Length: 431
Image 1 (cartoon, rainbow, N blue to C red):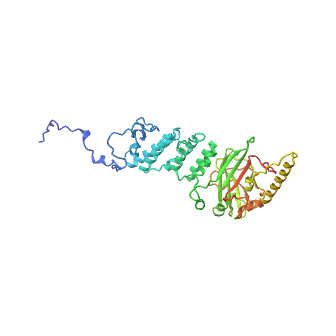
Image 2: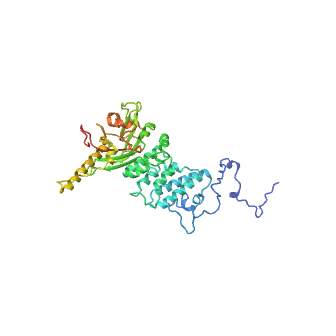
């Protein structure tokens, strides 16, 4: 006979402390592997980790301001970001950096923003997160952080003693995708900042050289100078001036020179190229294969417009030759003055005979009966263009030949585009 024995003191069993059943263990996932980069999981969080942790105790994003204190030096990424195992940590670092970048482009303190960007870059390297990809994601109100940095850039740019956050973002984001380059163009267009656009266009991150251009020009981006001026008293007129180094060599080898600029609320592309068979760059117009062609078109995001314009290329001697000094007016007051006047006139005539006379300027009219329209993207091959072959002008045809008088002694070609946004008539309204 079994007699129930009363439990002795201390033999009571707490069911909460009992080990789980085997059935319960079937649904428990295996523990995640510990990341050596994540650091130990125990111990109180450091003061610095509270600034850039993914969420604050209230569940909101961390503030952008850097922690300050006496004697605080440069912080390592692990002291700024303290997370758990690697898979979860990478996801949290990604979310935290996205929030910091959103706050960063709203800041007016360039020094502080630059410091946060460097810390984000260090943390992304430590946790194998691509900062370049985060900078090029359109996760800030439908645009990239680079777009908003350009939009919020102070007028006239940062002070000389301040870092340029736009340049820093572009350097961390390189290489840029076509979509990001398009975002940069759009931001410069929205701010009508032609100066910043030209500076960015020369940077390797924005417009890297082709292989042939890199060999011809060296490691630096070609300094194709583009200046845009409004015409005083003419709301629809502008003048764009260009200087293209090593023009003939680049045309013969690279076979294309692209000049982008902003004028009258639009993005423009003036392109010199060597025509190919069924060439989409000239709108599939019939041009002799191998001929040199100048093309004017709009870039994406530009509203359609009518235009009447001309491209002018002057003989360099016409720009550098000083005007003749005016002769004295009125009758000579003495015999000596009369003799000196005759001698001066003879010297001027002798000087004119010794120097070659500048050739007439090349003038190519660029017009279109219908409005110019912008393509939907830079990859679109079906859009309206104005294309004129240099062979259509006897003087323009000479640009292809060695010793052309319109090319500078250093190989540069200087040209200007005079334009008015108006329906062209039978006569050039600019000439």
